[in-house]
Each structure stands twice: as C-alpha cells, then as structure tokens.
Figure 1 (cartoon, rainbow, N blue to C red):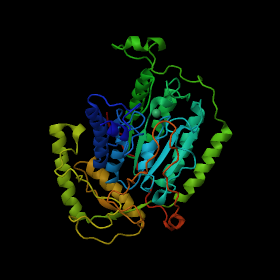
Figure 2 (cartoon, rainbow, N blue to C red; figure 1 turned 90 degrees about the vertical axis):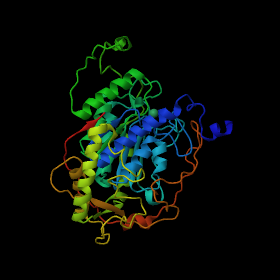
Figure 3 (cartoon, rainbow, N blue to C red; figure 1 turned 90 degrees about the horizontal axis):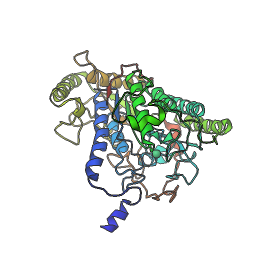
Figure 4 (tube, helix red, strand yellow; figure 1 turned 180 degrees about the horizontal axis):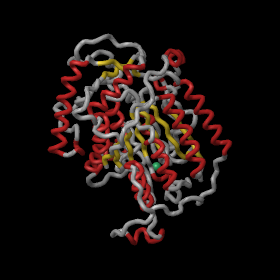
Length: 458
Ligand SMILES: [Zn+2]
C-alpha cells in the first residue's frame, strides 16, 4: 500500500482522506456534466466552481489535484467540437492539462502564470510550445511577481485575441484559479477581483460555448468574492459592492462587507512593459504557424438522417430534463461510451460511423461545412422545435504520426514528469518538430463566432 501511495503521489500536497473518491467523483462529474450540456447545446455557458484541478496527471496526483476534471471535460467536448481552447488564469502553470494535450492539435492550451523556475510546478516557460502534431498548439505566458491589473489585462487580451483569431476554437474552457488575486496566501500577483472578472468577461464575449471552472485560491474569502462576482458577470447581472447579511458576516468584517476590497499594490511589480512586450511578440510569432491551420475538417451528414435522429435525440433529451432536471442532461443515454450527439470518435475517425448514411467522401477543409456544423448543434440543442438544423460530422484529415494511434489519441501517453515542487522540470517532452506538417495545412476553415444568448448553469 505504501508503494501505491508513493506511486500515485498521494503524499504531501495530495494526502489521502476520507471520502476522497466521492470528492473526486463530484467535482470531476460536475465538469463532465457541464461538457455534455455544452455538446448537447442545452447551454452556452456552464460553470463548475468545484472543478479546475489542473495539476493532476494521468498517473499521479499533484498540487492538491487528484483527478484532472479539465482533461476529462475537454475529452468530452472533443467528441463534438473540432477545436477546444483551454485558458488558465490560475497563478500556477496548468501543467496537467498542457501535458495531456501536448501532442494534440485539436486542443490549444494557453496558461498565464508565475514562472521563476522554482515556483510550483516549475513548468510553463515561454518556449514550451507542444510537440508532434501539437507543435505550436501550446502557449505559455510566464509572468513575474506583482503584476497589476493594467499589465495583466493588456497581455491577456492581446494573447487571447490573437489566439482565438488564429485557432478559431469551437469551444473554450476557462480555468479561473483565484490565487492570481492580490493578497492570496500562496500567490504573488496584484490582481483585483474586477480585473480577474474582466478576463472572464472578455472570454465570454466571444460567444463560443464556454466551460468555466474554478481552480486554486487560498485566501478563501476572496475566492468566494471572486467567483460570486464572476458568476454575476457570466449571467449578465449587476450586483452591489455591499455584501448581503449572512451567517458569514463576521468572516467579512475586516473588509467592511465589501465585494471588492482593495487587493492591489501589496507586492512590488517585477514585470516591465518591455518584458511583457517581449512575451507578446514571441507569442504572436508562434501563432503565425497556426494561421490557416485548423486541424479538423467538417463533413456534412445527409439531411434525411439528421432530421430523423436529431428529432429523436432532442425529444429524449427533453424528456430526460423534465424528469431529472437539466443538471443531469445527457446522463441517461443507453451506451455510456457514446454520447447521443457524438459525431467525432477521435482522431482515427476518418470513416463514417456505422449508423451513418453513406455520404460524400471527406472533403478538404472547407469553410461552409464548418459553419453549418455549428448551426446544426445550436439548432438541435437550444432551438427546440425550431427549424431544421443540420448536424455534421467532424473528421480529422492530418496524417497520423507514430505513437498517436489510439482512438482517443488527443490524450498522449504522458512521459513521467517530476513530481513535487520544482523537481523534474522540463523533462519528458519530445522536441520532434515536423516542419513539413506546419506548412501543409490549408487556410482556415470556418468563420468567426455567431452571437447567441447567454444561458448559464450554476
Ligand atoms: Zn494555483
């Protein structure tokens, strides 16, 4: 037993405790359910503040994280969405998520974090950009202590805007770790709750299906303030700076019961405009490799099949929600390995599913079909009873590479990386660069996002 505990790193930051399995099941299940609802189109924004445990690896717990609910949720999103953008604003590097998709070109990971070399987890330097098929599909924004609101928002908005333009995600996952706030017990940034929330608002405005997750945060009352404020931002509500009277009043007395206490200016800012500009330029150069290189083409399913199964699935979903509530939408499907709206079976799924009507062969990376695929999803999910939407199936077109042959190949077999703070940094990442691959991809497939209403599950 001792050997297993060590093997899975259930020591130090990740102790074993009573009901650990139930704890993991709840927060990971919440993120999975959220991803299913986004795939089903029954919501545009889903929130799981108990999720966002971004350090956990396939083979070990790490940094208070046991199961990586983010990776599980992204895998679920990839069953429907061709490209998922993962953004991480926790002060710590999102190493577990980055590693899981390090060789995938369907998931772009962007992490903003403190990086000094010895700050946990020790990874996330500017030059770590993915490998194999995933080369250039990983970005890191390493920052220093004390970054303030203006600097953070400036680099965040620039990097995210450039990334969304280049990658064109069909879904976004945002990890909102609150340890990047000022006055955090473990963090060292100077962010206010308003600025942290502005990052969330900025991502929301892309109107791409959005999964919002929690993460770190060690000055608890500020974590609760931050995620309360961000929930309001996501539902489009304005809430007062005065906290309502609750049984927790004594907890917030030192800040005079304010939602936005002053958190900034506590740590000297060791970032400079020049250092941030260097990062921004470097990232912009990296993104040039992505221009016109979406990794997945869309293929249309014939309308007759769509009309039949789409209606059936929608009715089943509706019945399910009526009897069990929307929170468990999608749970009742017969085959747990197959989502009701699953059109994408992994990167080997270049053939049609057996229940699909034969149609035209996979085309090149055309623009029109990608756009129709989106319309189909929304039409089925949110527009109940409204016009005939057109589902589509997504197929990959890039050539296979050695070591990337499993059906769910977007999860790479992670090379073991060092565990514990500061150990084993930078190990285990292949540096193989397929430069030919970079050049071969064709111009971008689909257009930018379509405005849609905000619906929120909390
Ligand atoms: Zn953290």
